[in-house]
Each structure stands twice: as C-alpha cells, then as structure tokens.
Length: 309
Length: 105
Image 1 (tube, chains in turn cyan, green):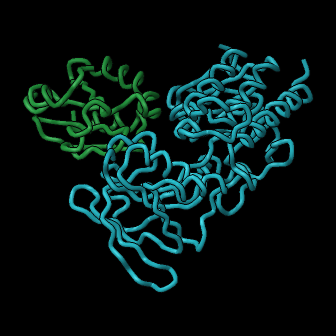
Image 2: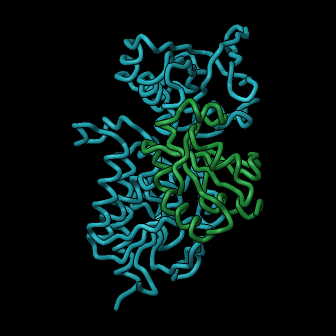
Image 3: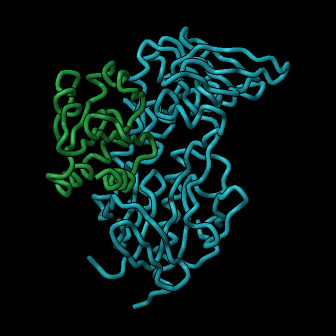
C-alpha cells in the first residue's frame, strides 16, 4: 500500500466505478470507497434498459458488477469502508474512514443521491413494516399483496412495473397532473393490467397496526380525501444528494448539489465531483459514467501539472 | 452463522438465554444484504461466545418473516432472553449493527 495515493474516489456507483476504470487505465494508484453496496442506486434497479449496450438481460446488479470487475481489472481497489470525514484543504487530501486514514493527490466525489423521505405521518413508523425505498430488496414480501408506489417519474414507473411480477396490484400515485416518466414506461404501465395510475393526488398519511394497512389519498384539485387499503408503500418521489460530509468544503447549490466546471473540477484544486451529486439536469447511469471518465482524466492531468517528479 | 427458519427459530432464538441473538434477514436479491454479509461474519468472530449470530433467508421463508413483522431487507433484530429488544432496517451499516450489539451486551 502506498502512503500517498494518486486518486481517492468516494462512492462506487456508476460515476465512481467509471472514474476507477479511467484512473486505473491512466495507471493512477486508485482507491474507491463505498459504505453500501458496490454499484450504488443502479445496483438496486432491475431494469437498466437505457444504458447503451445493455441489450441482453440488462439488470442493474449485473451491469454494475461488470463495471466493478472492469475497474478492478485496471487496478482500482475497492474499499468497503464508510467515509467519516475528509480534509480537502491542503495539496495532500485526506479521507478518513471507519477503518483508517488515506492520503491522496486528488479526490473524486461520487457519493450519489438517495430517495428522499416524504416526511408524511406514518412513513417513519412503518419503514420496514410495509414502507420501502427498494423494490428489488423487498418485492418478495409483497407477493400477492396490494401496493402503492409514490412518484410518477422514471423510478416510480420502472420500479412499479418490476413490482407487478410479485404483487396483486400496483397503484402509482403522482402529485402532478401528469406522469413525468419516459413515454415507453408510460406505455408499458398503461398496458399492464396490474397497474393503476392516479395523478394529481398526494399520499397524505400511512396507517396500520404493526404493519401498513392503508393510505389516505388527497386529490390536489378538489381536496377530497379517500382511503385505500394497501399492504405496501414504495417511495420513489424525489432525490437528495448524499453530500452532507462535504458541506462547507466545496461549493454547492442550496439543495446540496456540488458545483463543477466541464472538467468536473470543484472550486477546490485537486477535488472533482461526478454523477448524481453534482448540478446537472439529467441524472442517469450513462451521464454518471460520462462524468466519472471526465473527472478521472482531469485528475490525471492535474497530477501531472502539480506533482511533477 | 446459524441458518434460521420457522422450524428452529423457537429453539435457537426464543429459548436462548445464555447470550443475545442477532438475526440477519437477507436474500440473494438484496444487494445491500449481500454487501453487508462478509462484515457481519467478521463481527460474528469478534463477538464469539458473547453473541449468537443467525440468518433467515427471506426468499425461502416469506410468511415466517411476516410473522416476525419483517417486510424489508436488510433488517437486523436483536433478541435477549427470547424477546426482541431492538431492530434496525433499511439504512443499515455495520457500525449501526455493532452499536446495537454493544448496547445490549
């Protein structure tokens, strides 16, 4: 183990793994830190059909496992460790994890984003008792049961359609007057007899005894409230960046998304950001992978300019 | 880790009075669970003789999981003298698991 790494990558989703591939190929000594599962959010998605080349059996776990394999083949080392703090101020950067302290010439921030908690009554109480944020993890439990999916975007429809393989019925609820998901997913949802779509409606409350038994829906137009018996509530409504650790250290917008230039450089020299954590308008596996590549190449360039031998 | 199921749960968990029992609910489809598993196995070695470690494959025993009020993975329950004393679910990290163990030793 070198005392000083070239590149420390925080997060092993598609952005971090892609950065690992490019950094490894540039022969940078590279570590990739991940506190959860390698592959990030993408590894929890069953259908990953829009990533170019993912034609046959395109599941998230498979594709991200290949990305990992690829990064490791080029020399990047995966560390299943939780980053507790970072020191980005000096020329040598420090990453402190639950297992040790690592020093690097560059840091690539690729922590990703996660689905937000809605903060509605019952949500926290029933988390793990019918409220879930991961369809691939929990679908089995809802075999032959009725569930509701909150969120009519790509994630909501994609995960809702996955749930139809298990559940008796899947009701997708969107607060806005129309769904926001891509047309192909909307078509599939419309053609699936198990899927029911309700727009312009919010889930106001989740109720039950020990487990979820029903939700209270509110029509945003009329204000009318209705009860709907369900055993499961899957929440895919909105994301937040997992950037709390870096607050005050690199420039961010009000929501916590990191500001970068087209080279993925943050305002701190030697520190880059890639993937869902940065300000951008399309958060997809393909754009995360592109970010990672650019960040790693920019990191390589930064090292050659600032650490001449 | 002991493989737990509806048949041996009573004996291995409910009737265990000599030490706390950590129960890991997992399935092969749960990427988060699979990522945690090697670390949980390390914890098992670290707490050998102090805590008993068991796991339930939720895919094989869905109904039994329901009866234990588990509907999400990963979930970790801690039992003491046959009673469930604590549970963590969804945003589970190895640190949180160890914290739960230490609190209940």
